[in-house]
Image (tube, rainbow, N blue to C red; front, side, top):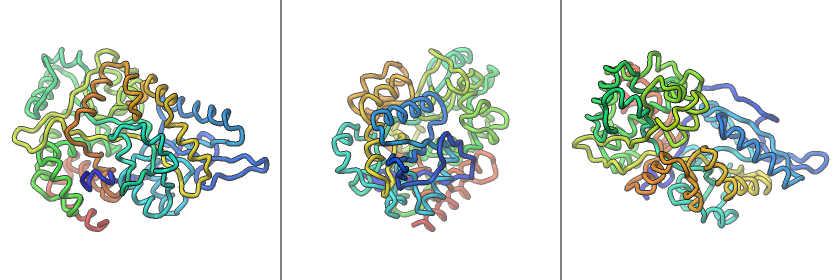
Length: 429
């Protein structure tokens, strides 16, 4: 496995946001003992939307019931707020006992600082139950430092009724066909694409996929080794993204929109106000939670190929969500993470529509036809790339998100974008 996907490195530290504290307060990593001998675990996660919000809360209470000597205090944080808060905690050397992780660069930095517990032997039986794609982001230098809760890929989620209304008879397979679909939707008076530009990370998916399709995965591997993102394929990806933005395919004010707010990207698709979004396997659940969902009208297609490009439609961008344990957390934290990854919880997770399974023995539980299609596409992938804002060290991931946002806004040229990313990579390297 290449260096770009071996370490599958880290979530970017983005602008500060406010945490939503459910119970207790943050920080920890030491499983504080109460006067009565109760072990209190601090659990930070990003399950702010349904069904994750309820599932995670229920699992914490169920674990407490099965382990009377353990109390779990939950800190629930929205995605970007979590990244910012965890960057601060990492710098301070003070991580919560159990915390969400995507693997990759942020996890690598935490491991290098001695802040994360290795799980290779202690969770060996659980690790064996995961698919290779699911466990890969948490495997660093051959050792496992996190257990996944789901795994999947990014693709286009689209409103089939809107496509029919616009006279589009099949999902686009090439970039030229995709641009034609955007034009047809605009002519039909339908907003083609919803995008949460303020959140930054959703926009980077376009540049990442276009780079994969133009330059191929080898180009991304070479950039990871050389810390140089100025190859022609990266520049061309920015040019193609700018050409798309010039078509005005996004909703008005998209650069000020968030991803998962009531007026955000997911809600626009979930309410039928926009025809599609480029998003991961969690998209249907967030669409339903924020916009109501569009039911059987929701379809999925893979990111199109670029004519003449080195990439392949079976090469996918993706990742998943998992949980890690602080190095100084008590053994009860390890038991809790293993509980979260166990078959009963995985089955409940899949049946609730929270995401695609990480365990091989749960794949057969996928009832939704569209989600099964995504799982099959991931299983048949000829190549895999972790989200770029997590595949590299956090500062590089942050610069990728900011540079892509500049391209979308028209304030940064494609050449300026790759030079800024290269400068960040060389500083980190």
